[in-house]
Image (cartoon, rainbow, N blue to C red; front, side, top):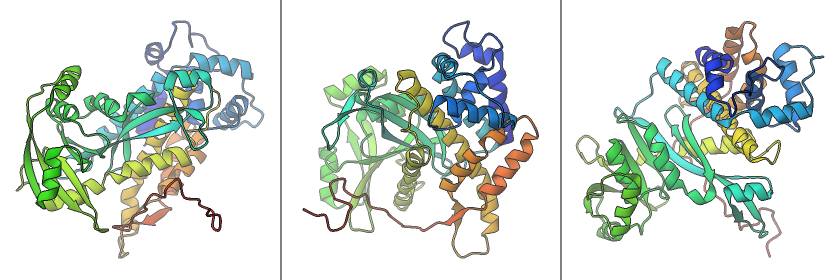
Amino acid sequence: MRIILNKLDAALDDREFISAHRYRPQDFSRQRSLTFRHMALFFLSGAVPSLQFGMDKLFRGLTKDRSAAAPTKQAISKACRKFPYEALVSLQQQAVKTFYDEHPAQRWMGYRLVAVDGTKVRLPLNDDLAEEFGTQGNQTKTQRPMALLVSQQDVLTRVPLSCELAPVRMGERFLAERLLSGLNTEDLALYDRGFPSFALFAAHRHAKVDFCARLPKNFNTQVCRFIASGQAETVIHWTPTSKMRRDCAALEVCDRPMELRLIRVALNDGQVEILATNLLDTEQYPIHLFKPLYSERWGVEESYKSFKAWLGVERFRTRDRLNVYQEIYARFLTLTLASMSAALSQPVARQMTAHRTRDYRINFRATILKFREQFHALWRSQDPLASVLELLAWVVRDQEMIRPGRSNPRKSKHVNPLPGMAS
């Protein structure tokens, strides 16, 4: 973990990195109190009531000087408008690369499992944000600005890999297609039922990336016939329509017909799911592997819960367009670093609980809270290794039992949660 933080810290002081990530040549070119590094750490420090309070807290935390005062609110606001969110994206990618350079990925049948999923982020009520990101109505018929975030996660280590933020009208599938370039032949992508399309699968074929995706039961006539047949699995020959060919042309991928393996998965509640995969070898990948394989995708859902509930991604300091990108990508980088802390602590937790009958894992909610509590100490120059070791030792103390097969059905938004209030 120290290696990762060292590389990020070095990048924040590196003139080449700063030069490559600024909007104008004169930005952050002079030695001022609000340096490029200070601004990056300011966004990473999390949601705060105001700009002034957040920067004061950062200066005090980095120097241990309770009398340290940050520049004025006006100066902070100007510096925020100069800081490019692309730098946060680059730092997150650098952290992921460094993590896997030092810690090889866990594997399933030789693959790194990468779950892809999307979520909508509520934005402040603002006309500029509505124009930039689009709006969606809610139960009160208020048209609220909404952004769409699609991310990839290594579900075996629960480390986020990358994300794309865009207007809600862009659609999850479009962003998933853009993220596909970050995967390779050693990855297996897991998709929920909102993603599958001929063009997306053709893009996987072009990139030589394997996949497993849940299909809607009415996905096409071949899927409907498969469900009616009662078969456990089959291989279909899928010929694209003219629209599918146009979609492939837009992605610049080949539109030739493809073979898909369809698999029926019976759930514990009696429901049936249909999975589609390009892993056609039934001997190497027998049918019984796919139910537990697809269930691994749930990790990305849990990651979004952390992203929203525990990192406060929908709490914005201002209502500026640039600030939305800065805040969301900063929270995603924080989520990535906290996930790495948990992943690095997990082997120790496994040893500590080896005598127990059940398996345990690091409590991720506690990890996020501890990471944020230790945030300033991690970025101080005095004895940084001790701060990292202190954090990991603190993280490993909080563990939770793994309960196989446990489910938490979603509650309908239309059900009144208060007892005795039914109409």
